[in-house]
Amino acid sequence: TVVKKSSNKVYIIQSLDKKLLIEDISKAKGLNNDTLLTEIETIVESGTKLDIQYLLDNMMDLDEQKELNNFFKDSQHFSLDEARKEFTEKEYSDEEIRIARIQFISTIGN
Image 1: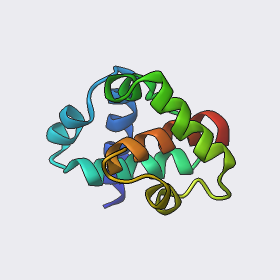
Image 2: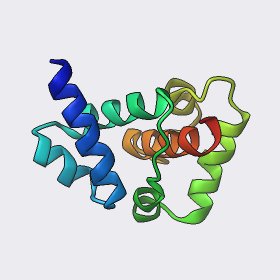
Image 3: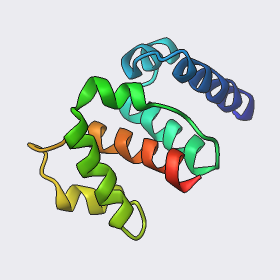
């Protein structure tokens, strides 16, 4: 329902502002990580800025972050599919790419 989605959106934004981990937010809302990331992508793609740099800092080193950031800078559509074609699962997990993409859109795209 619309009320539940709105409630989830507010909770997600507040939780990210508090620098909670994806696992903790998804558990609290009864979502899996993939669904939560989709919700976060929707929030950012609708124009809301989020600072999830702390998630990236916990997942990868600065050089890896720069590599993904440069990829998204050079891409046409900031597409997850484009990134998946460029980088293998051994290089970056889908979650890492999605979080880097969300941070990039929030910082550069919005």
